[in-house]
Image 1 (spheres, helix red, strand yellow):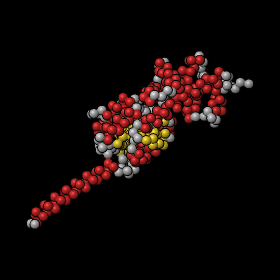
Image 2 (cartoon, one colour):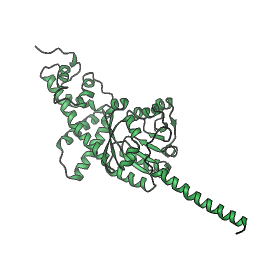
Image 3 (tube, helix red, strand yellow):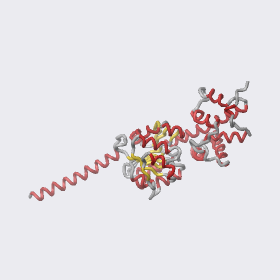
Image 4 (cartoon, rainbow, N blue to C red):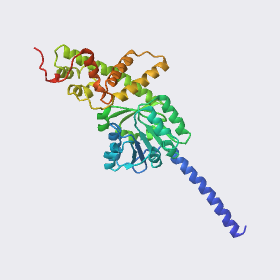
Length: 342
């Protein structure tokens, strides 16, 4: 073969081989299970409210490059001060990220932020990208997002959390994850900065676990405030009463988080009443789908709805005490100062 033809042939073969190699490398990047780190992973974060602000802050402190979006820019300012980059849409966040976390208010917000055809995360995420929705939302929506992400060669994890604002600040949240287990394992260095991840099963199972968690909390909170009202009516020092039961069988995380706040009339939200009503409503909807009767859940939702009716939806869930005080025409205000009866 003449030398020019030989060179062209070899050049063509080299180009063809290089393209195949590049494609294989690209596919390997999409499917590898290498753990993420600040050196190889860009993070996006959408939702910088009571929970999201602290959770995202842990990633920034660990050295990750983080791009954020929040509808109210002022709520994102503390993260911008820490070095986060601001984007003007979820689409832009995704275009600059390998992993995008979302923690917003309602399922409608989740749908808009992730699935909107032009401004949503999925419209800007490259193949191999990962969505992690940490909002408490509907299991069916989590499955829809998973399918939509898969169709774009991306991954989606539903990973709602429990632990309130204190857990978010201290990095000790319980994280309930559903989806591809290998993807969740890959993301463990990120999850570990926020708390403990628990693999619950396939897509949607993280949401189901969080809803079961909310059902448990709802009845526990009712029991806590009823016990406090009873103790006060019986003439007990309620603060001493709470200290006494905290190490016994009635002790609970809810008591630890909210008992003293209630006595101090501190109703600042670690978790909003409005959002809890939303969660319990989703629980009741799922119960109807399953044919389950959970009367404790239904009662708790009615009590929390009464707080909304009184315009108290933006208080924390510990404000449930207000509903019980109104029912019984009493107040626990200043009861911590009451001396024990002889």
